[in-house]
Amino acid sequence: MFTSARVLTALLFVTGSSLLSSASSLPSEWRKALVSIEVLAPPQLQTPGASRYQAVGTGFFVTPDTSSPFREVMVTAAHVFQGVCEAGTTLVYLRVEESPSVPDSQVQRYELTICDRVVAGNNVIFRPRWLQHPTADLAAILPQSSPAVHFPDVRPFPVDFIAKAEDWKKWGVGEGEDVLALMFYPNAAPDRPSSPIVRQGVIAEAEEHADTLLLSLTVFPGNSGAPVVLRPSAIHFSADKGAEIGLVNPPLLLGVVIEYVPYYEPAVSPQTKHLRVMFEENSGLTRIVRSERISDLLRQIAANLPSRN
Image 1 (spheres, helix red, strand yellow):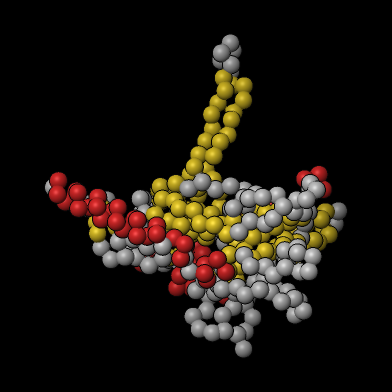
Image 2 (image 1 turned 90 degrees about the horizontal axis):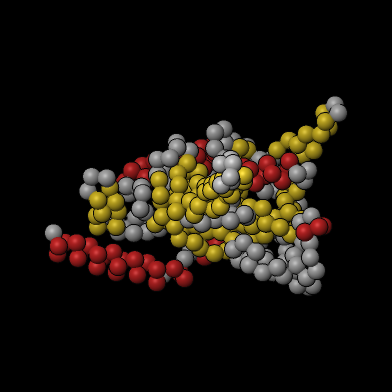
């Protein structure tokens, strides 16, 4: 037993070190699928020398097609779009990793109308152009732009990259599995846009809800909508056998970041014993929508996609 434990420990170290050493060699297509969703910052929040744009979320492109030509659908957390429209704005600006620069060295951003303003009686309402999942905080939209606008090279995730129910079962995906979150670094510098980064996390609770699971992963504003990928590993965990060495699983899209889980700390008056204030902190836990809901949404939107002719 002692020898087996030492062998397992050594394999864990060697396998982990090997995978970490290849972190700088992540497929370039992954970064080309990622997009920063931004809005014009309110005037009071704009400062000299800083960007006029504020990141409100992250999105990624995926295709429902298994053969060329591939149609591109953008997926993000539904509350990202909802928040923009509820604030009275109908536009967001998309920024990809390698946005070409114009002569004045300003980064290119691409307008996307996500909702329409409609007057109904004495009220102004916003009709979404995106499709929302019926139960999950998930939205998909088909980006459309003027033919005169040259959108940069985007590489959507293939449909078979999305983990299916049988993939979860085959690889025993559960608590303890390592994941990689692809997102933009929040407020890296006030005078330049951030680039995509990779954060490593661990599945903390796989059966939280039919639509969601929890990760031990810290996220910040602007990270909602980021894709989460299962990290390739030969080490898998099961409730009855513990850690096992087996086949290396492929990278699979496991879900989409929707929110951090807050930690609440009450401040109670020592004199009255009454609650005076409640402090809220980032607990380091993150909730994501499961990959099966992404597949659900793709099936819904496929009927509305233009022909591939």
